[in-house]
Length: 229
Length: 370
Image 1 (cartoon, chains in turn brown, cyan):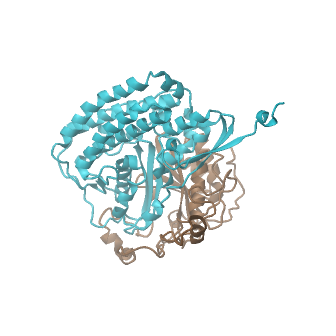
Image 2 (cartoon, rainbow over the protein chains, first blue to last red):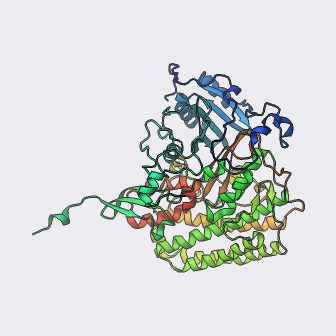
Image 3 (cartoon, each protein chain N blue to C red):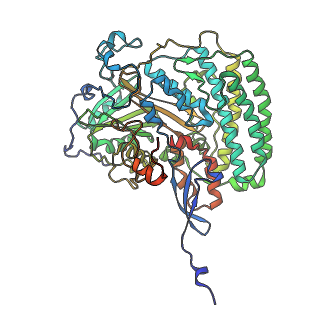
């Protein structure tokens, strides 16, 4: 088990508070949001107007509530200071870990808590935030019949450690995260693009990548047409 | 005088696909061979990548609904169900009971259609020509019911967020029951053709074995996991859309080889018929659409919802920033994750086994590449 207390040396301390770690998120969707009703105007009025299940909390953050269970307690004790938040939203539990603690947490969850199936690895881009990306690991336990999301917030350029050492399934999933977001995983056995061509420039699922944007140079060179549009 | 080149046993790199009839679309597999033995494989995918997840961020929640049909186009209804359930979860609503029952019927019918296409093409790959004609004939009847219900055969867009748009047509129940009665003996017919067929058994038994532990390690789900002896089906484990009301079994086998996966899927078709019969017998009266506003605008937050698609766990991870468009939609495709295990399954096997294993994984490249 590699989850013994490491010296606290995270290069990127995410904001410490539990709820507060989701900063005001109006991502100012770049460029290509078409003629849909602009949500910005509706924002302040949301608690009153948001017809369905209007959350009592301010609308800009997820109305997550603390997740209390033996496992949450155990995680908080064992990873004191490294698991920052244990919450639940819509009946789905998630924890937020420090970027350098994700792998020990996944390892602990797999070996000690039966979360032996890595369902998915993905990311979310919040360009306005200091820690630009959410990195999300979705886990499932056959024995408990429970799901759990492990999230971490990482800044641009941070190279999270690969989860392939814990779950083989992470291999292609992390490659796809790299392909779409440009997040490099340290120690990954095969860190290449998976869906896009290897020479492609740019990371399409970043918010600053427009929906009609393409790597025109690549298109010209390889497809021998002026534009892919 | 012996020619040195004949004795030289260098590795051979063989390219299979992307235009190859038995790769079920545009999958390219690079095989490293020693004679006929496979030393390693590498999958090259992405030929069908259309950026579905990016498109989602630029459409409203309702506008994105038809796009999901284009991922696993063989089981479009399952895709739609997963997406609608995920958005409904974000809105914290549920479809009315009547809509749920109709959803279950159509989804199970789609499971049969998907398995039929798998069986036909899988048998064709192995060299049995007949089953594909039978399978497509039966699948046609299922597609006709979809067409009668919603006007489309393949990319159906059958469900809407909050329920259904269309009420059932007159004689829907009768059509479904007639299909069930007519279809069940056909499954026996396929089994008669294949199950004890010496060539079929010879080509499938002990080929592409994936144990239960390996399945979990690689995140492989669906019939592949069940053929390895894990009795796990999301319809039972975490029921959605009212599946807890129906009685059905989860077929499992123990060996985890290609033959077992074949048997599991055959059983699943029978179970789907069983579910459809129960559901048709008890479609509740009432509305088919829940209380959903004209503008779908979930509160800030995120949810992951998954269903048991014909190919395995199909999940949607949706993040909302409170706008009318999703901030992020991540699709967890069963085909993509299952395909990752291909290398493990064929290492050390023969070239001909690759064809059998690709067939048995039941991948749809539209879903692998999205």
